Each structure stands twice: as structure tokens, then as C-alpha cells.
Image 1: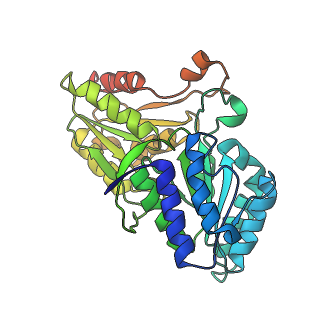
Image 2: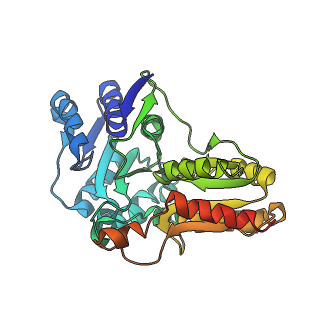
Image 3: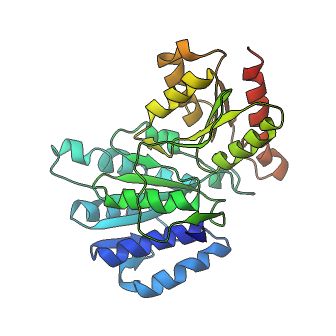
Length: 325
């Protein structure tokens, strides 16, 4: 194990893939964001200058280029920038990338990894603060991974690179400096396998991406009150680990889902709907969602802070479900 930040883990796995496969190429701008961690990309850029490309800021154009290259046998890592910038590329993703394998009867493979940064980003306002993963979850044909740590970033991206399926890897834009113990060797984390980060008997708390850390902080606060929370990180939306979710709810009888997508038609809402529809008899109390309100994100620091799940909001939701008996 070595101590590594999220940005370093991304660079590490990109280096592994570039060295092992001459067909592998990287395209995109500010792959590690605009913070101090961006300099960690420079050594990789120098080592593989012939296979790292910085296209013009036209996400629609270079996403289509990445799709075509992948269809022709290249293995592509395409960074779309922030979640908001994925919208111009939506047509290529939804109409071409997601359906090509199915529409071709399996003859066309798309080994493309689309990477973007989501989340509320300290003054980013509505144009730079989107978390569009629920929208992409609604499009069949794309695998979706959301690492919540440096260790997960390296392992999940490695799995994405080994797949012939198009994969969307979504990093939180505020996580590039977050450190974790990361194995030095090459490894992969399987898709569709959730991770139980904290065991508990009273409430199941599901969270993804940066909200996992928020959920763990809330669980610590509640432990001091005698409430034992089980924290589950699904790690991938497609495929989704339903078994781990239902097994946990069967143990606790209560469910809180915390996520930074919006409340309406968001990730928290879909997970809540799964359990309400298929596991209603397991519940001792109503499900509670802690999510972003259905409103644009303001550039005001005070209003921005009100948009995201916090340990206090999550803890309050857990106390509410506990109050139902």
C-alpha cells in the first residue's frame, strides 16, 4: 500500500493502460481539474505525448471522435470535463455510443471510457455544478461507476479499461486531493459489487461518490448517540448490486439514501423506489432521501452550501427513521 490522492490514482491507472496497450489513447482537457493536483498529469503527458490529445473545447465533437475511434479498435479514455459539459455530448452518448453494440447485433464493440467530474464546486454556479449520473442511468447500454476514494478510482477505472462496453466513470470535482491507501500493484474492482464500509444494526445508509465520506461522518455522530448505521457504497450504478442493498435492509429494517443528484428522478430516488417496490415488507419505517433540491445551484456560498447533503442533514434523516419504531 502507498498513500496516494485521487488524482495520483487516476494517473497511476492511466499509466498502466498506456504501457500495456499501444491502442490506448487519452483525450480531454483538465483531466485532473483546475486545482493543484493538475500538475500530477505532466509526467504522464511527457511519457506518452504521442497518445495524449488535447482537443478543442467542443465536447460534442470529440465525444463523437472518441466513439468512432473505439468502433475502429482504439481503446479511448475521453475526459468530458464537468458534468455540465456532458450535455453537448448527450446526443453522441445516447444515440450512438449506448446503442451501437445492440443495434449492430453485437458486431460493434465500444471500448471507450468517458470520464467527467460532477458535483457542487465552490462557486461554480449552475453552469459548473451538475451531477448528471441519473440521466445517464436512464440510458441502457452504458456502464456507470462512481469512485468514492483513490483506491476505488484506480480499481474501478482499471475494470472499465478492460471492458469492451462503453463506460462512464464519474469523479467528484472536489475529490482529487483526497488521500487513501492504494495498492501499488495492478488490480481491478469488479462492477456490480457494493462495499459495506461500516456495519450497523439499526439503519442502512446508502451513499455514493463524495457523499460516502459525508455519510461515514454522520455515522460517527450517530454512534455517539447509540445508533448503529450500516454504510453501503454501491460503487457502480450499472450494474447495480441489488443483493447487498436488500440484504442490508433485511438486517436493519430502515433505509436512508444520500446522494448529490437532485431529489426528483435522482439516484437516491431510484434506489428508494427499488426497495419500496421489491422490499416493502422488510421496512419498519418509511424510506428517507437526502438529496440536492430541485433548483439551480447558486454561486452564493451560503446558498450553495444549502444544496448538498451534509453530516447534519443525514444524521437528522436517520433520527427520523429511528423515530418510527
